Amino acid sequence: MLATSVLVTLCLSSTCLGWEWEKSESRGPKQKITGESTINYTTLSGFFQQDDPATDSGSFDYTTSNYGLIDRSYPTDGEFDPNKEKTQWERFAYYVDSLNRGCDKNAQYKVLFMGRHGEGYHNAAESFYGTPAWNCYWGLLEGNGTSVWRDAQLTDAGKAQCTKANNFWKHALAIAKIPAPQSYYSSPLVRSATTANLTFNSLDLPAERPFAPIVKEYLREGISMRTCDERSNKTYLQSLLPAFKFEDGFTENDKLWKGYEGETSEAQLKRTKIVFDDIFSNDDNTWISITSHSGQISASLKVLNHIAFSLSTGQAIPALIKAVNLGNVDPATTTIQSWAAEATCKAPPITSISGQGCVCSSASSTSLAVATATATPV
Image: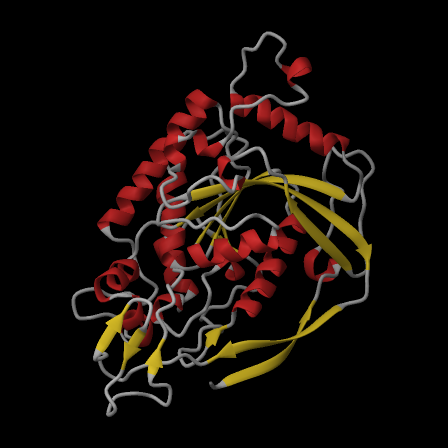
């Protein structure tokens, strides 16, 4: 297997990530770390059905289960809701606020709403051709003459999933009193940014919590060799979604996608840790919406020390996260294999069997003749 090993140095200093919580008005004494810092994440379980190992991720639907919020009491119910008049979300929100009020200067709590994009044309194509053939041949193309899946748009089914999500949020905001997100972040890939826009843009949101999404490069899907993982240029994205803002340093063209090598899982975890350190260091808000991808959300759950929970297109998972700054440390330097080539065919494969892979013809194969059947997280 062709591979490139590189030395990855993670910069976790305040210069890079700005671990500044001084803006907070709820945590008492504040801190401003000026050296290198390490942030540790813990998912607090027992609040959402999605953090219960007994929940079947394959059949679970957050839109029919109050986003998965468990019907339970909280230690603050007696002072906040003595007459039992508040909704579950109102009581949970008060409890989360109490955690932030009561924690020390090195800790903070956030609730993350992590949503996977609606079905894209690449998802439909992978289902049609089968995962092995998609991974080894079809996914490397821009499309098939009927559909285009380079930085794929949403299918009609994907747009319908966004409408379903939008209807859920309308009801949840008005009836269940779910807290509206205070911050919105999106992957730069069209399918995710469009999903965020169709889900949230038309909602009747509080004036102090407008839909003002920020595009962050490192929230993108795992960067495979397939064209669905190559993002469009910034100019096009701005024209498509003018309400979206881009993080500082966001480049005009995609400088990460290669097409001949794919990002390793280790590299994806590294950049996922970086983007969460960035958000937790620079965003003082508690209620955060993140719209991205199945593979990226899986990596996020690992970084956040959450149990594995797979998401079908249009589904979402919430999590109550505690972040603790462990203080000044030496810069973290780790050597990992960041990129690796994948098996491909130069023509449609002879066979594409789930669990066995696809077999290229001898005349059309690359140096790696048999492609794997590993499901593609997109």
